[in-house]
Length: 218
Image 1 (cartoon, helix red, strand yellow):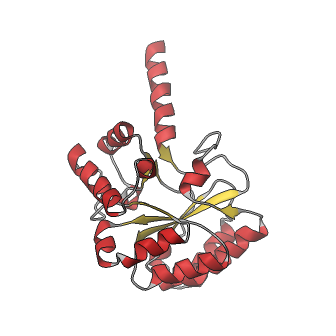
Image 2 (cartoon, rainbow, N blue to C red; image 1 turned 90 degrees about the vertical axis):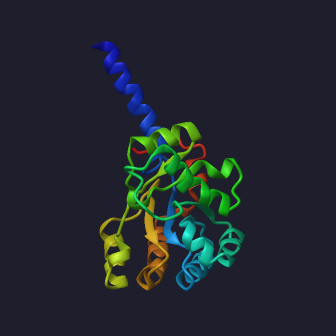
């Protein structure tokens, strides 16, 4: 009985260190953008982030990278972090170990990430199964999820997105999920950053958010 409880607690500890939804830090949060790069809206997002001297993390899809290669260096040159959001943006839940590995690592190769930069990835739609967890353990990676999600990809106006953040204000340690493929997100981004600025919150990359944090998912 006690051995089983210990096993459960150890497994829970392992999961909490692998699957990240937020971080226990002070005065920092992370903006993340999924599904890019987009030929129109990614560049507009970069311009707004530059205006606020803000950095973010872009979870990029392999097939979109192929179509918009010139944007990758532009994202990196602005100090932003780039990570794998898989090659084809398919749910990983029922994939084999080899298929999960290929989906994640093919994007790492496209982005020419160093071993240290390959520590983070985000499964499409945040959905994954036990095999993905095994892959994360063996590859020493972290699965990055989120704590705030305004569902910007289906918003009918920037007002909907802004309203979400007025109701659910950004807090220290939050990981915000956005998408750089919709004009409404671009239009709402300034207000999101202004709200954070007023609370003295600094936007940082995922790597910066997790460096030195005491704990995560609290």
